[in-house]
Image 1 (cartoon, rainbow, N blue to C red):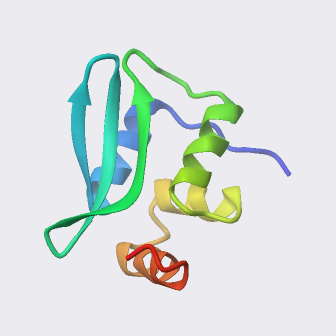
Image 2: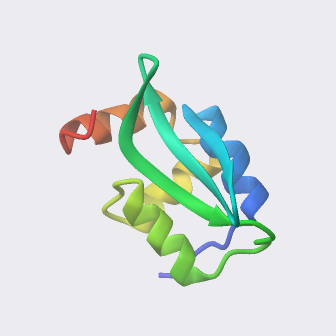
Length: 96
């Protein structure tokens, strides 16, 4: 299976649309999932200056966001996977 590559700005836009808050710190941008106004343990980060992300980094992000497979993570970024469906995944893993 081929891994679709994403640019940092695509990840940034998608995560913010799906309920993540963005926090700029030092050399990284952190994304924390918020449910009902409260931060959850679901979070990831990107390095400042990152452009097109490597396969290793994309797989790490997918894992940190609680995806079992890269394809579903790709759906979150490309938008077929809606926030409600993502929340269902998180609930099934007892993360929210």
